[in-house]
Length: 296
Image (cartoon, rainbow, N blue to C red; front, side, top):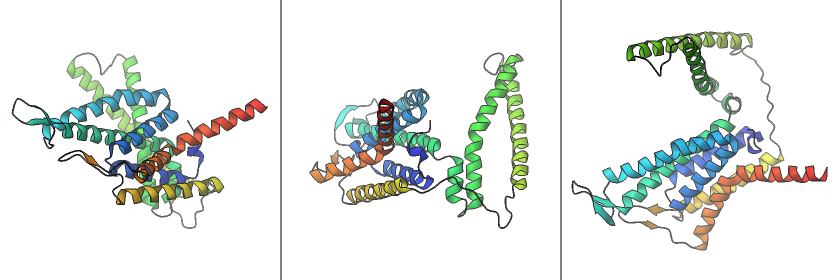
């Protein structure tokens, strides 16, 4: 789905995801982690619909539960002892909460990357970095595009082999292994042929020739300037809050965070608005569209 934010200038999209990913990996405050994870899931659901929601329930929730269970089994720091393991190591509240925080951070980062892949396409990436690092940007763009195509082609070949009675999910182990190797060989052959076709296409279009011009459909308009100013304000304000320890939180040796003062609440509020910006833009756009339809 192409939402309102994905239609903005690539520089705006890239700046936004750089900021939210950096903040999501830096902040350890439970409120900040909850804000980042909730906004990432909301935006991913807006972009991907039911498939994104199934991805969250099928992979993110078990991953968070696994991290919350594994961390207390290996880390025993903290002063709030809840119980003892059979080997005598303590089970502490701080280790459980830190496991949940680490799991929330990982899930938020993965969901933001899901949104990034949906919004910042390979064309946008090449547009942003094609002139600065043309070879690297092209390689990264082709690699990011190749992975989903390789997966799709693998599924097509597997379905064709299944129609011929060669299924990798049933039968004897040797037969399944032989079928899997055959499918992999076919897909590798397809990838090599596709690489040759791509190289011929690039050569015919003048890639690497001196003086080659480029056409761009992206224009930096007033909305993009306003968003850049908004992101700049939010980034500076939230970063100032982090440097002033207004968004800090410690899990060891005891739970300890910044006091809830009006200024610290404002840091979290601005961070919430920053993460919710694409969702709010889409809601506003839909509201305006419905009003115009009602008038018509």
